[in-house]
Length: 107
Image 1 (cartoon, rainbow, N blue to C red):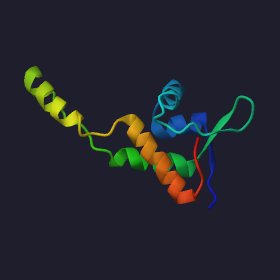
Image 2 (image 1 turned 45 degrees about the vertical axis):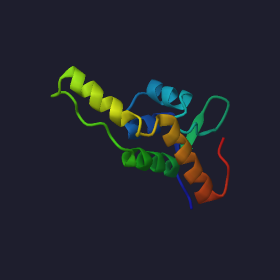
Image 3 (image 1 turned 30 degrees about the vertical axis):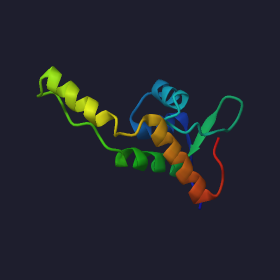
């Protein structure tokens, strides 16, 4: 399967975030680090970014609590957050899916 290589600017545009946010997502292990294209250039396969987007879209979302009182919101939030996957769990799930799909290990 052939996949286009995306540069940092392309990934930032596709995700609708800044380049600084991309670096923060990589640093926290939420976004796959991609691979080095040269001494100071990083790239991602477009299929990897699309798989990451799909995985994020599948993750449960928090309900909007703006209409609730602070105490009720905190009680509901505390009860729900323990059942939701963390960003690191989502990243690990993404990596394991890549390994299963490609038969290769990811850093």
